[in-house]
Amino acid sequence: QVQLVESGGGSVQAGDSLRLSCAASGRFFSRSTMGWFRQAPGKERELVATISGSGGSTYYAASVKGRFTISRDNAKNTVYLQMSSLKPEDTAVYYCASSPDGSGRYDYWGQGTQVNVSS
View 1: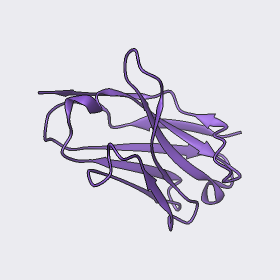
View 2: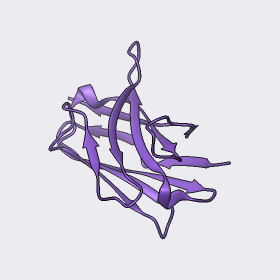
View 3: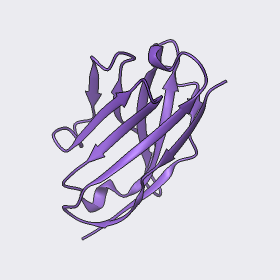
View 4: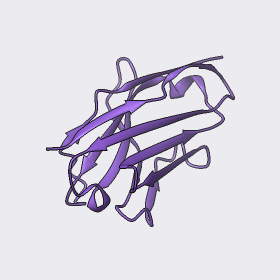
């Protein structure tokens, strides 16, 4: 069983930065592909970024590429999302998720952390 706990959300102004963290419990964290998703009010959940178990491979949605950076520290069982140049359209609940077999099927989810960006 894997438990994921996000932190670092908050309210900021456009152009500011935030770093989200996701602490994972359970075994085999370093083998798991990790992803950050977000869901804005009235919208479907969307994939923001992913990172492979080793950290050597990453993916970003077009809407955040160049502004967000996903990283991980396998010694701390933690994945991060550094968000810069935030825009009001980045306002959403951000979720961390784990794909233990690296297949892209995310079996475990955190409770989410709210990010509000005002103009």
